[in-house]
Length: 344
Image 1 (spheres, one colour):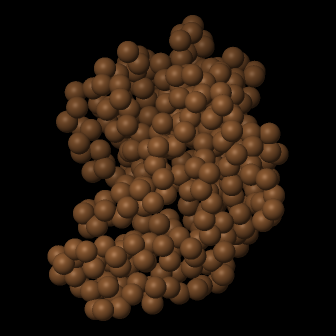
Image 2: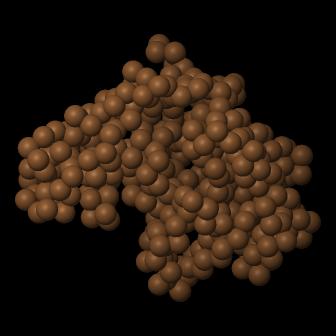
């Protein structure tokens, strides 16, 4: 039986990982530590809180004394670190919070883990750090996808803060022997995502009849990964991964932003035609008025330093750990759309 501490477990990816882990490993004890900032919502975990194997603690990863007390009192042997400020636009407007949360916060966790596990001679432990493909920078149209050997070249304060945290995790393994692993993932989508990111923003704005802002020409390309497939990848790293290694988790699923918006518009319009109850629930949606959601698309000034393309080469986790995404983009998008429709 494992005792997990999941930081940022009330956020989008953390919440989905909590439900994934409790379902697959019902004997394990799962503790969530979350500061409940704007993107963290305890209501996300309302079903988890009915499980006697689950515990929620509100607190900040910058509080080293609190983290150490949790590691000791809950006999934590596995720390999965999701907690991070992650929205690029916000990092451009106010980078200080990203430096504090993503760099200082990660270092605080590492110090607590070292003190509790290494100085306490707790040999059976794992510190897994969740990172992003944005640390690698931007790709040209014909460039090969990012691999684990791609040099870091972050272009936004957010990406730079995550790159720094990756280096700290690696250093604590190399210098002190802390048993760490790192995963760098592509863009996630799915239930519980805060509606500032592209897919949930597009869905919720369509339902409310609000403009769909698209940066520049909308041809920025991202690799998209359904959130449960991300959880599967982390699971494989924790159970089969080699200590000290980094694994890229991707969906082999590149889409331009504008194509994503158009796809969501088409699927939602189809959904409204299939379900006669939706126009009454969402009267402001163009599909409720014999219109089409694509009329809401509005091109806006591109953001500063906007990376043109990300793509993940996930060959390492495929071949070494047997990872394969379970959701196609079509099935994942439908699941995501249905969740947001049912949750609004």
